[in-house]
Length: 322
Image (cartoon, rainbow, N blue to C red; front, top):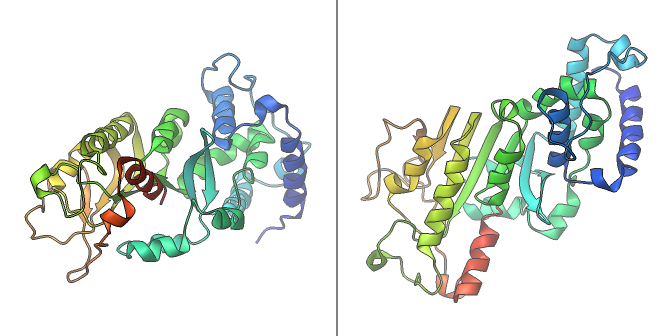
């Protein structure tokens, strides 16, 4: 492993510089990276991006003068791995930010929802304090345009970005330049806690128009995928989590047919053979199901956890952060 002593010092120096940035630069890390990307290789928008200019060779730096690009990339890879290869993306105070996943193994496919949530509560204050909280990677990327250009592609290609079905996903698509999204590996989880695409007369017990807004949930789901249809991703995994509602699969996954990715999989929690099963051979994604005999359905006491419009939507909003 290469000696990273000089890089550690540089990271400390750049972290201190980042803390002393003018207030206009104290934004979410995605906003800052978008600004740097725009100044480096995209037409700038006045007053929003860093000054445009070419990267300098930086030969006064030991990192650039003594080490070839291949070795520098090994160092960058080591640094990125130390920040966490799985990052949760979400909105914090209206800003797009991220949080390192402390337990990536908790997101293995076909685990029960309780098993996933027991070890990775991204909205829990105690959990949030236990992991890196957003600024760790920014100083390195903002310290030098040459470093940025050498590492930014690795950031998007080597990191798994986990998103909820919410405004964070559409904000990410609108913020990150398309060339970097083309390198990205995105994993989207969707806890299905709504009788979407089901007629009222077949809603599961406990769901009522008072605690469920099926049409609004369907509209949000479809709008989310329309945003993703505007870009092409390298890898896209969509995992549907069953909160006691089995819905028509063809109708649920119809919006995903407009999305394009180099590797595209949809993970369903339900076995094949039931009335709502669907065939997707003509779709641009592959469907995976749990092993035979596995039951991933979580029976939810809707009367207890979702009584009333306000409370029901509150539970629904919290679940989408998982």
